[in-house]
Image 1 (tube, helix red, strand yellow):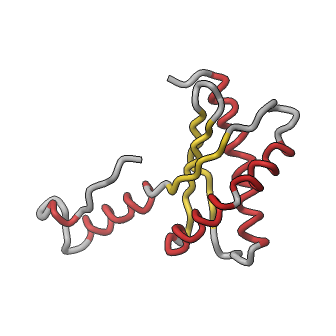
Image 2 (image 1 turned 120 degrees about the vertical axis):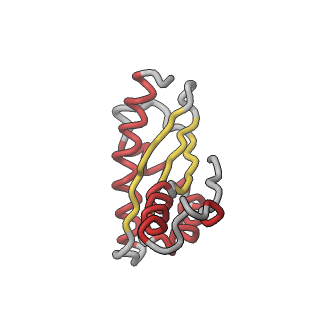
Amino acid sequence: MESNRQKKIAGVLQKDLAEILQRAAKDGGLSGTLISVTKVNVTTDLSIAKVYLSIFPHANAKELITGIRSNQPLIKHELSQRTRNQLRRVPHLEFFIDDSLEYIDKIEHSLKGKDNPIENPDLLDKRKKS
């Protein structure tokens, strides 16, 4: 169960991270890439924030998440500049790909096509828990 404080901090982080990452993608020459922060979970001690990203087109996702992870200190620094009036300490950021949209898309595609998972359940990949 998340406290109100965790939710508030997660909301602040989500909004600012979305702006930071979107601008970084545009500046990095990836103007057709859409990065959205789908969810932020902050630990009870407020030391770690798990950031879930949805990246479109999905083909660039792995490469982008690697770049984002390696730039974590820079992102955290910019975040601390933006949130210095709201947060005393910016939590350590951990980035993950939120593949739920892609997963839903796959299911919809399968249900419409010949490869219907209801008739052949082996077609859907087992979803890994993150």
